[in-house]
Length: 505
Image 1 (cartoon, one colour):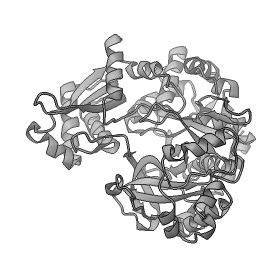
Image 2 (image 1 turned 30 degrees about the horizontal axis):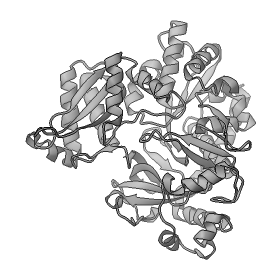
Image 3 (image 1 turned 180 degrees about the vertical axis):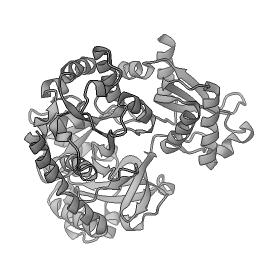
Image 4 (image 1 turned 30 degrees about the vertical axis):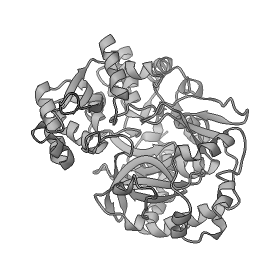
C-alpha cells in the first residue's frame, strides 16, 4: 500500500505544473477556451442560430448572445432529454444532472456531456487530490478507502438512452477504475435512493474499513458520522478510523460546520479542502493550506464572464471579462461550458480576493438573499454575523434559515431566523444581540433600516430543537444528495413550513 500511495501521489503532483501555468497566463488560457468552445459548437442548432462561425472575439459574443437562465433554455433541454442531439453541444448528451436548486422546488436537468465529465468534473476531483498531495507530500491518503455519500440515479422516462440523477451519482457511475478501486461502499449502497437506509448501510459497512478520506456535503457527512458514533459507542471518528486525514467538502459554506468537525475529528493534522462544484461545472478549489480562498480553475472547458451586482436587474446587463474584475466587488458568475450552457447565469455570486492569481470566495446567491426592505442581506453577511455570535457565546450551528417579517398595521418589519445548534450558546439573548450588531457593522443598508427600528425591528430568532431541519428536509423529500438547506429567502416560503414542523414536533 505504501508503494501504491507513493505512485498515486507522484502522478497527482505532476498536474501542479499545469495549474501554475494557468495561474501565470490566465487571460491566454481563457481566450483559448473561448475560441475552442465557439468553434466546437458552430454546427449545433444554437451555434447556427447565433452564427458562431462569424464570432471572432468575446465582445462580439457578448453583443450577440443573450444571458440566459434555466427557463430560457428549458425548451432545448427538454428536446435533448427526449433524445435529440446537436442542439446545444455537438457530442451526444445522455446524462442530465437533476438539481432542485435552493430557491425553487422545480427540478432542473442540467446537460452533462462526456467532455464536461472528463475535462471538468473529473479533472476537478483529480486536481483536488493533486493540490492535497502537493501541500502535504507525506500523506497516506491512498493507503485506505474514501467515503463519498452520493445521490441516486435512475433511467429517465422520456428516453431509454437518457439518464438523470444527482451530479454526485452521475460522477460515481462514471468514475475511472482507479477511483472506483479506492471508494467504499459499493455502487449499489452508495446510490440507494432511500437516504436513511443508505446512511445506515454506509455506517455498518465503513466502520470495518480503513477510511483515510471523506468527500461530500458537510450536512450529510455529519449525519453519517453521528450514526457511526452511535453504532460504535466511540467518542470521535478517529477512534473508528485512526488513519483518517483528509476531507474534501463543498456544496455549502463550511463555516457553520467547522467546529462540529473539530469535535468529530479532534486532530490538528486533519486536512480540509473546499471545492466549488455544481451541476453546471467545477469552478474553484482551495489551493492554499493557510487560506480558505478558492482558486478559479481556468482550464476546465469553461469561459467566464462576470456581472456586477448593480447591473443584475438591467434588461440587457453588461458583463465584464476576467481581465476587468476588481478585488472586493460582488459579481454574478456567467459561464459558457463544454456541455452547451451559453452565457448561463448559474445564480451564484463571488467576490475576488486577489487577481494574480485569481482567487475568490463565494458570497451568496443572486436569488438567495433578503431585500424586502432594501437591506440587501446576502449569505456572506449572514455567515459572518453568525460566526461572530458563535465565537462570543461558544455556540456551534448545525443549520439555519432566515426570511422577512412583513410590515403589519404600522409595525416595522423584521428578519426571522430559525437556528438549530449543535452546541447551544451560553447566552441565547447575547447570541441574538451579536447577530444583529454584526449585521449592522458589515451591511450599511441593514444598519440604516435598523436605525431606531424605523424599517426593521431587531431579529426574531428561534432556537430550533435537534433534528428540526432534518425532519423538514425529509418532509420535502430532499434528504441527501445535493439537496441543501436554503439559507436566506426574500419571502416566507421556507420559514412558514419550517415553523410548522417545529410546532408539530
